[in-house]
Length: 131
Image (tube, rainbow, N blue to C red; front, side):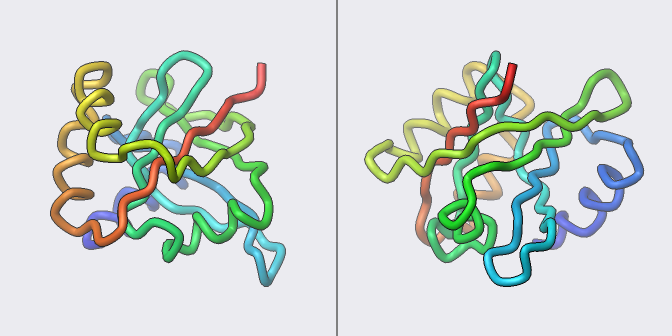
């Protein structure tokens, strides 16, 4: 919560803090782009998120309505946008997914700790990034 505004600002101006990315969904009511900082879960052409509030999270509800998303990801110091399709995975074990992500992406450990601390209803989200 307290980290989202400064992380969102840095990503908006093109500076990508290590371990974070910016997820853009389309608002289910407004149809306007909505941006949310998330832990950097990119592994190859997939991007993994463990949503700390599950289907109660605004971005998850937006994905339920429109699974097409964009991700602003770090490339060196700067960041660039990627398109993809999000999939909600309620059958996936989000705690196990976080453990796996930490082995693949050491920079995700801090975000995983925050999600575990504040999370109320964890849900795994996989984004398949376009070519």
